[in-house]
Length: 120
Image 1 (spheres, one colour):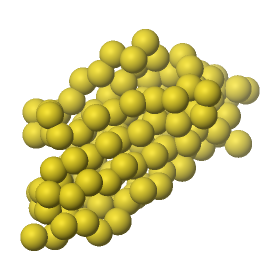
Image 2 (tube, rainbow, N blue to C red):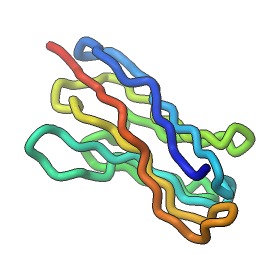
Image 3 (cartoon, helix red, strand yellow):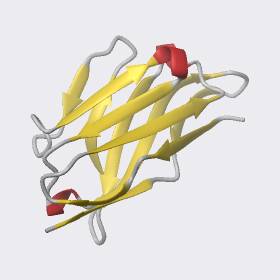
Image 4 (spheres, one colour):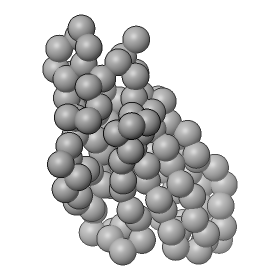
């Protein structure tokens, strides 16, 4: 089964940290590009951070210096370490995959999302 499963969201106070995880199944993970997006209520989904198969990274300006994206190809997992969280980081965070899968060709996949709430 081809899918992405996120975890690690929750409620945290401003200034705190969370680490999100996304496990990919059924994908050729090591040659896939991965990313984290977020969507706050009433707003469009936006790119937070991305990491290529070669581990090149890019970040939204709003999270640079606070968030770090990483990947563990042995575990088919991509992470988002979020530090110095702010109330404006409150959103549902989605994992995104763009790459080849076993038996289903090239796919762009989305996880179900994990909710991050940052309180004052």
